[in-house]
Length: 137
Figure 1: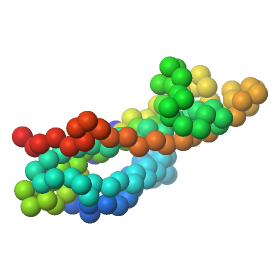
Figure 2 (figure 1 turned 180 degrees about the horizontal axis):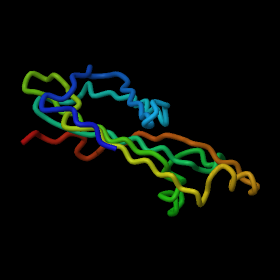
Figure 3 (figure 1 turned 90 degrees about the horizontal axis):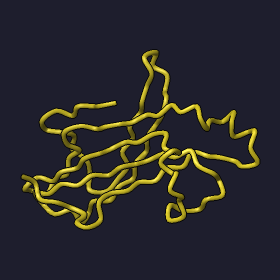
């Protein structure tokens, strides 16, 4: 999915929560993304992004550091948010919001019931770390 935010983008506070709701054509909610962010250290005239991945993963895994190599098979939803700051330091969601929705049937809820393992949907939010921000062109 793709949401165009226009040339100006959408003004957001330096720290907060963004909610993006995905609807089907009949108006029923398919997925609600809730992304908490803190950009209080973002310098003026720079940009960055945040990416939230929702994985359908075994419940016994406690953190992302212990994810096995096949973890990409667990991806169900992804939302990508791009932020930019103006010369005055105001922060905007800019350009667009991008979403990826996977509908995999190889390991769904019905399949998981036949196994001795329980699965759950878990979300992880990541952004760049080195450097955390880049200058705007």
